[in-house]
Image (cartoon, rainbow, N blue to C red; front, side, top):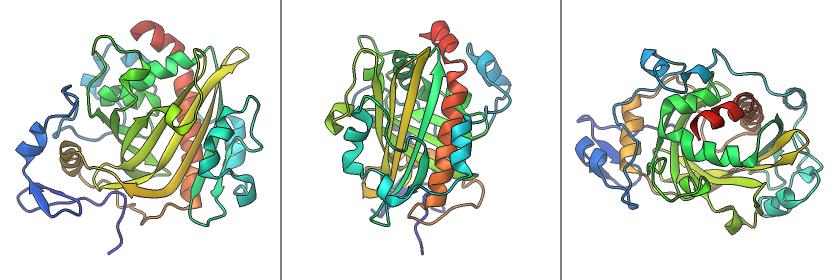
Length: 317
């Protein structure tokens, strides 16, 4: 049987079976497993997945920023979506990511999708201009939004359905905004190209990948894995740097870079309890067509959030 990215591991007694290990874990064990940092998790094993806002969400102090629908991507992203894949010889290899993002100008291709010359690795990229935005605002956002699903839904109302943090660093004293997310894992349910993805995104120190940051430039760099299976799926990087009138984000995704990733028992049980959702699972590996959808998804969510991020930051930072 083909492994799919949203394979759910169920037992008749509603326990969680850790993928590939044969170890059955009860809901109580999964709910009480303590995170290594000593900080609590925001995972609620009974929280449902849904799009939009319910009455309880409307009572949140930031609810005024929720929109009925996500803004379209910027025009160059739409043009790339309806265009052809980028030829393999124009796509930087993953080991050239730092060279690609550290440059002071622009890469030959800043927005597009395709498959690398190895015939396996799928790549997507998107450039987003963001008037009035700074890199500091994005560092704050990544340290703040995943603690509550209602915050995550602000980012892409049409596609973001659930979020939780492995360690709730949002109110921990003495941390910079960047320290609140680097080393932490965000568990998210989102729809990409109409397909449900249940992901565990672990944010990494960009310096370890050779990615340069400064007081005015940040890079959000992360490893993307399944929330249910001990499988890494690829990497993402979002560089935010100053641009006239604000900032610009240069996003990169590399998929089908497999590895072993530990499964958090509470997150796996929570995903189990949220149910399978639409029957749209696609067997691994990811395809170039998925990369096309991911590029458009990224272009929409970044453009949408940037439209109110300065005001949200001023209200809640």
